[in-house]
Length: 435
Image (cartoon, rainbow, N blue to C red; front, side, top):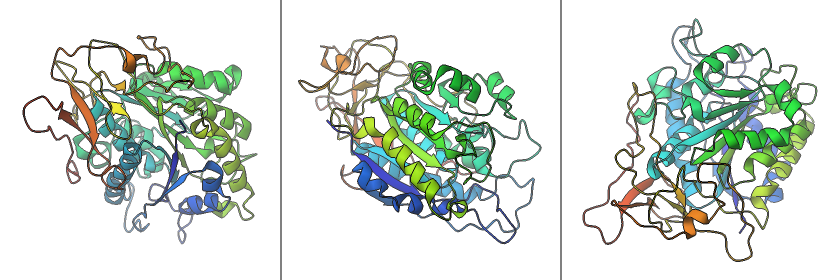
């Protein structure tokens, strides 16, 4: 069964400093430039539209005022999370075209909502030339969210960005894998101290892109699924100078293609975002063409006819009952005594581990992909096909609203039909948690 790709434009430039006093960052033009090279047609993708960002206007912001455009980024992230959630509810694979790296906040919020809904943790593969780990604990001041996005999504920084809807962190440190940073990244020691797993360019090249992708799978084997962030400045400026902060020592297009192919070649991967390409530095469109070629080749496993549909993994196989739940083919069971949920700003962990599972195995004749070396050691479909018992009230995951509608895209837990009581609505308020 082919996994249909849905392309969503998120052309925000709110997370970057202005390149000059009289101009704005050009990465907002990136989705259009990539679409001009037949990206959707070549991916056979559905057009999921464009989420127009607020106006870029730093106003009278000064260093020490916190993150510039924080209010606008927070609101944009809420809406972007809704749109990503709606795509996943349809059983599709989101490809988000940024924009700057602040789009990660919207993706992270969507993943935390999903993790809460299924009672598990969602991980992050962060492919970037820079760690983007600047925060008030290691810098004299913050200001550009695109240089602070990894810090923010792991719970570091001001609450109106790092704890939207009261969720902090969106990703736990141990559920993040950083690939492609330079060997002398400014915050490499901070990543190490935090316990965030990294593989800088020298190690990535020594091991190879394919083995690095498999290694990333293994690091996130305890997660129910993962999101992939790609900043094109992971590429060396010799082949990709059209970014806001080119830094020597990056990888080649061929390596990025192999890495992307390996990361998405599993239903464990829930979606991909691409950021920071700036068409202002690409007057003839040649770099856009190279990016599109890389994306199309790298996402081939997603759209291949034999691709396994997306499903969330279980970290262990306790006795349970599973049923199909909506177009995303996701199911969840209650995990007594604690089920994953949103935590307040003081919590070190946003959610607790649960037992998410796939809702159905592959059809007859379909290949069965092994989804990482998790404790269960099972191939895709084993959990769904095994007879199970339910010792506690089991919960299914169902989309809110019509599956085909582009709406909030949230998931809620509801009792099995034979149980008494009204549905437990886990839909978070879109206005909560803004400090």
